Image (cartoon, rainbow, N blue to C red):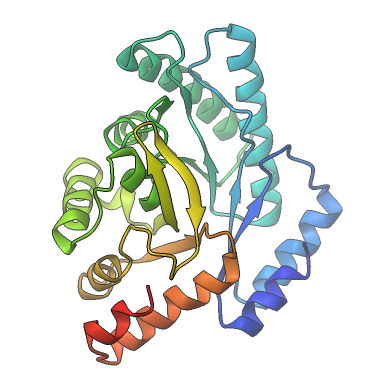
Length: 271
């Protein structure tokens, strides 16, 4: 893992989301080396916390364990110099969506309080989720972020696309998201915007499978790239493709060519 920043720089990439999705297991010595390597190679770090987080679980002990996992992720993120910890908020389970949201907010507030008490700097980043059984619609993520002082939304565009039955195809579709973020959260959403992107297959239940560029799946990346450039939005876009670096390079290439004035028709072929 400590060699990743150097490899990313060689590819022309400049961000790395450290995966701690099974469990948080980076030791402090390793964290120090990773931090130094990231700084040396100008790589911005974020960290993805464990999947086994569920702040709206039916069982109180699951919520308590989730608090511990997120707090540990924030601690390790602080060690490595990551600016945000991404996590999945939970599932509706037996709760009505509003009830699940309120339960999750109260639990995350406790983590935020403990993190502040420990002096941990990384932001708390609840992610938009792709399955309709999961807590994490765009509106729900906005509500969570409004209630948590040191939080920012993590916008997974593929998840929104899948959850909303293929909603992101045009510039107008993306503008709806950016307008809502600006209206509801203001600068809190764009300092910088932390986003995930991949092509995705979905069913009536939502997200099904991630795909690489060129396989005929949405969402469209070009309209998003246009908005980021034209509105001068500071954004970190993490590839969630099955071949991470391949599509990260492809997205950067599209953005670079767009800035240089390439025709949309040419760039659409890249998708």
